[in-house]
Image 1 (tube, rainbow, N blue to C red):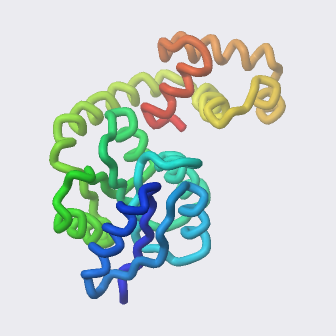
Image 2 (image 1 turned 90 degrees about the vertical axis):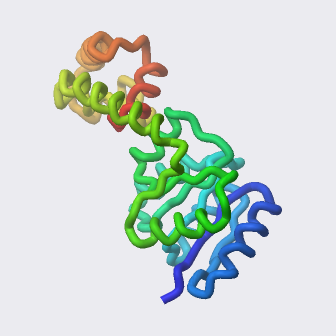
Length: 211
């Protein structure tokens, strides 16, 4: 059975090059070429895709936003990020969202093809340059999990609700508690995680996989 690939990049010349590269493989079929987040999601919702080769930075929904939507909707395509650059926070977020591979655009074409095959087979492929970053992320993630253990079940629930954009009143209504109680929970959460306010809390939650 052919390996069905979708390509997502906002540069037509990159899309053309990728399509030609994968077109040389007899068992690969490029079924979608997308130039923004909306086109990418439409393709994945409308067709069976085995592997999505996804640029991290695109207009509309960027790569991480697309990964978030795929996870929320339960779309089974495996995702390989192909990017010019990615920082540690983006890498941590991508791994948390279930990305199967990350390849830099400077990588040799034959290695990109190998990466897609590995991802399709259920493996994980990370560019070798991420070795040190990955070690640091794993250590940081372990420390973050230790801190998160100190949060109560209710506090973790409130963190996730806040990260999804709910305000205090909505949180209170859903949990059937008073707004004053919600404020007390936030005070305790901020102290435990050493953050100041909702913006820092949202960034911490995304960075350390608390969502």
